[in-house]
Length: 188
Image 1: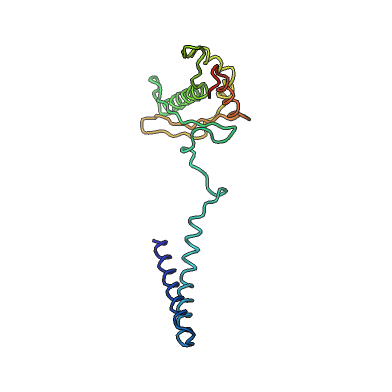
Image 2: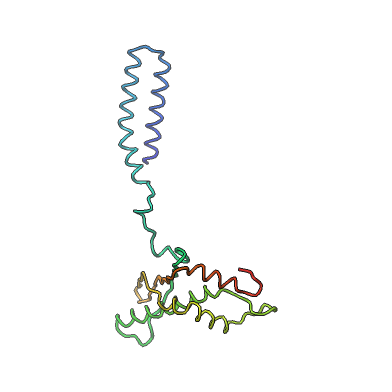
């Protein structure tokens, strides 16, 4: 609506300017047209300032929704969203929430290890040795994954829990990329 309003005002201002040019110096007509143009401009300026303030995209004031940031946030931070259900033995609301949160965290850690592991082939036949990869991942990134933190959590009516789990370490992305490059065929 505001863009349409501004477009109409600018079109009217352009028409007035064209009429001023076409009057070829007749003082009475020029004064009326200039007055009308200034009136339109005075109506346009407040509307333009409203629109310009609303559509500005500043990085300092705008923060992404944490639920929309999964994957690499920066060179040191990896986030993932995971869900967990309450344990079968949980009876109270607090127990259900606690067990669902713990299950979500365990699932998030497993998902991150899986992402960091990737699929590396360990033989010429292309067969993946998952047992060896799991041990290698635990050695390389296990402590980092374990020391991650939950930065957001939410529960539904059945006490299922969704978490955003974040792991952070200086140069983490570079280390993960180097781990991928370690494969026998040199492919990433």
